[in-house]
Each structure stands twice: as structure tokens, then as C-alpha cells.
Length: 291
Ligand code: NAP
Image 1 (cartoon, rainbow, N blue to C red):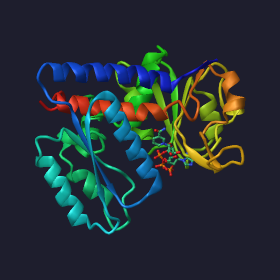
Image 2 (cartoon, rainbow, N blue to C red):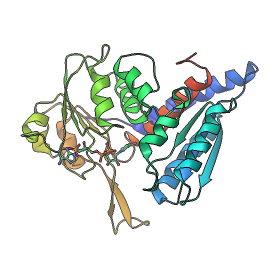
Image 3 (cartoon, helix red, strand yellow):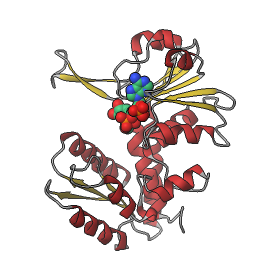
Image 4 (spheres, rainbow, N blue to C red):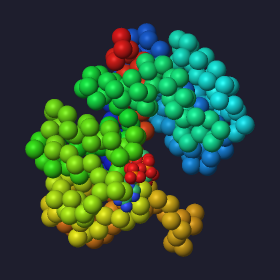
């Protein structure tokens, strides 16, 4: 069994991006500029935005965080988005989700100029992705593809079972792995799937993205399978200073000995997600997708 080290791969890609930025600036260009809009006081969102800010600093990007109060109206947020769409000094921006309940996430996502939609959530980008056209890929699936590439994991003709069908992870992941170049035979599963255990046990590659701690057990995994664990669930723990720990969707200790490759939680898929956001922002700054 080989452990897929997301931290190592993320560090390697971070160095590559930093070198590209250094060259851009040395050639007289400006550093890519990423803006994050954070509405309200959600603790996890603040942590995620903090990590994104830190990573921007590490690769040499300019980063701005717009912190808006919880009571911000949808109209005020849409006005802010219109301003960023028109600002030539902003290459890409993200609106950190979830948003307060009085704001429609879909309206907000669709208000972002697809050319600056570095989260890759706008229907223009998802539509282009499905058509195999250049687009900003959603960060988590793109991060998983980077891991498969880095470890030279064979995908052609393999049966990949994706557990979960969310817009940000499961569905784009299933679509991308079915595309030419990756060439998996993909089964996408969800909470209404029958015989899930048997379906997962037939997989050469399992992508677990359902958000249920330790759901995938050893009896569900074929010997030699590749297991990618996307799930992150915080559970109380008396062994950590913080009083909680993170668990993945896979029961790591019993599944790992059966696998050819497996990602740990934390330190697997998680560190890759931010790197993919950085890759998209670099592409935006270079006008690589839309010219
Ligand atoms: P989500 O929107 O809640 O979607 C969960 C999906 O799992 C749904 O499609 C749901 O099916 C399916 N599901 C739930 N219970 C199931 C069951 N018992 N059997 C089969 N399928 C089941 O979640 P998400 O946003 O995709 O995130 C999934 C997990 O990944 C979460 O733990 C999240 O924190 C984590 N995550 C990690 C990263 C990272 O960077 N590592 C990034 C994003 C998300 P239905 O559609 O039928 O309801």
C-alpha cells in the first residue's frame, strides 16, 4: 500500500506556481490578484479563507479578502460582484460558501463573470467542462486529478465508483474521470443507490465524497483498489488539544492494508483543493481560458 501524500504534492505544485509568478513579475507583468468575499462569521469559512490568503502569499499572488457583515443583502453582494467583474486589477474571485440563508447561492454564482470564476462553479464553466472545453475546473476534483497524475495511477479502462453527486465534488469528478485522457468507466452513486456495498466492492478506484465519517469499510473495498477519501467530518476527541479531530469517509486503519494507494485525512485531498484554486487564478491572470 502506498500513502498518497497530498501535502508533498501540494508543496511541489506550490513551488511550480511560485516560480511562474516570479517569472511573470520579472518579465514586467503584475502578480495575479485573487479576491475572496466572506459574508458573515461562519468559523469554518473564516478558516478556509485564512488558508487561501496564506497560500496566495506563499506563491506570490496579491490577495484581498472582503469581509461583509452577516446582514449584507443579496443586492449589496451582487453590487460587490459587479464591481469585481469590472475591476481590471482583479484576475479572479470567489464567494466563500455557504452564504447566509437570505442570499441565493445560485443567483450569486451566476452573477460572477465566468472569466473570473476561479472556483469553476458558474454554469458556463461547468458546461464547458462537460464539453471538454478549456474551463476553470472545480478545485477538489481538479486536486484529485493532480494526485492521480503525480502518482502515475493508471485510470484507462478502470472502473471508478464515485460516492456522492454534489455539484462541487461528486458530479464533476465522475464527469472528468470519464473524459478522454482519463478514460475510466464511471459509476456515480448517491443516497438512493441500491446495493452500494456491492457496487463499491467492484471498483478499481473509489472516490468517497459523501461526508459520512468512516462509511467505507474494508469489506466494501476490492484488494488492490485505489481509494481517494474526500470526506472531512469533525468529531470530538479527548486526545487533541483542540478537543476535536478530523475523520474521512473511509475507515482508514482497516481499508489501507487492502489498497494499492490511499489518501489520508487530513493530508490527502484537502491540501490539493487550495492549490487548484491557485492554478485557476494563474490561468485567469494569463487569460488562458477565455483570451
Ligand atoms: P454534499 O453536498 O453533502 O453531498 C453528499 C453526497 O453524498 C450527496 O450526493 C448524497 O446523496 C451522498 N450521500 C449521502 N449519504 C450517502 C450514503 N449513505 N450513501 C451514498 N451516498 C450518500 O457534500 P459535498 O459538498 O460533496 O462534500 C462531501 C464531503 O467532502 C464532506 O465531508 C465535505 O466536508 C468534504 N469536502 C472536502 C473537500 C476537501 O478539500 N477535502 C472539499 C469539498 C468537500 P444525495 O444526493 O442522494 O443526497
